[in-house]
Image (cartoon, rainbow, N blue to C red; front, side, top):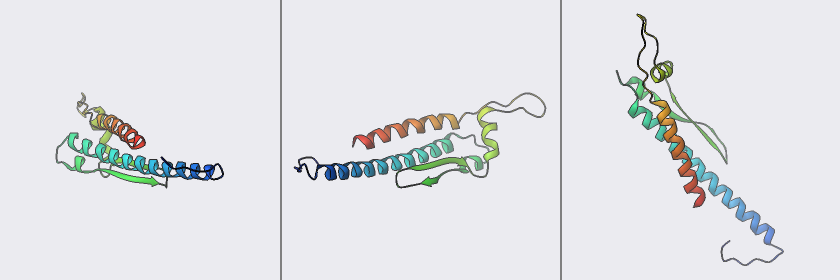
Length: 127
């Protein structure tokens, strides 16, 4: 609408169209940011996950669970090794007594993904 001259009769229509275009553009930018952040979280977890056989690290996935015209939800999860996530993240009691050391790898990735999402959304909204 920059540099466009409109009459008072068509002002409401032009304004409505401009706001609609902005909303569509912003939604697309936010959806792209959500996808990028989800993949970044998955990649960071895979690279920092404890490794024994490597199956746990490879089991992480970022899946889109819901997508509409204006929103998107991505879930990062361990597909087959989900039972190990809290045990490795927080440590656990051992059979013969004592505890294993916590190996935080999910929480740092979540925090980094949140920061990435915020910066990408700000970048997308500002243009």
